Image (tube, rainbow, N blue to C red; front, side, top):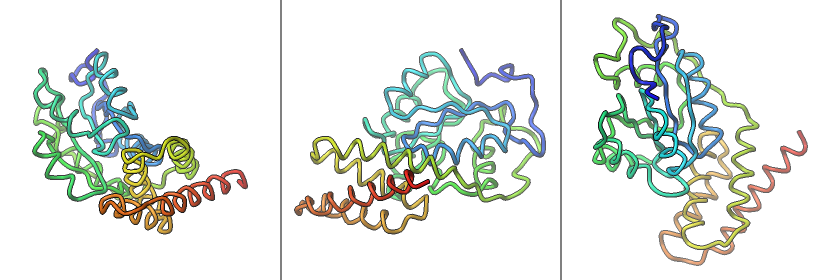
Length: 238
């Protein structure tokens, strides 16, 4: 099923809903980030589909072809650049293939893989999101004379952050091998920064640095796991 054709929806974009008629597939493992994008799509008129890993995204793309795809670079089963490269060479091509990450170094890799643009996390500004999508759409899919009409700070559901904590607690409960800790540090550093959780973001950064340097990480991993557990206990208190 092709969601990207002009006939996919009879609705036409408006000044207040400039992305009406667009279907956006979000390939992102963080529930918190996905909730932010969901709210932005809701305010913009776009439909949203979600995949939380490369495998899920590929399975989805066997059935549907969105008009826009947003691919996180750091995913649990590999790099988003691999999917971007695959989609860049596919035919027919998705209208806008976009990458996103909280790490600046990922931008060059994403664009080299073929991404049409790069979104910097955290995603909080509705106007930035709308403007970015509109500018990246091909000319035959871009609404005429429409642009981001208002700015608004998007605030995801705090419970989505708790879902992310539960996810990474499960990851850390398994074997703490190098790949697992790399993923946990990268995931937590990004989502904690998005949620302004400075304590957890800094702890995850220290873990990532120690991993990169090859120094012992047992104590740091335990510290990060303890902070994650504390966040989960806050959920129980709620």
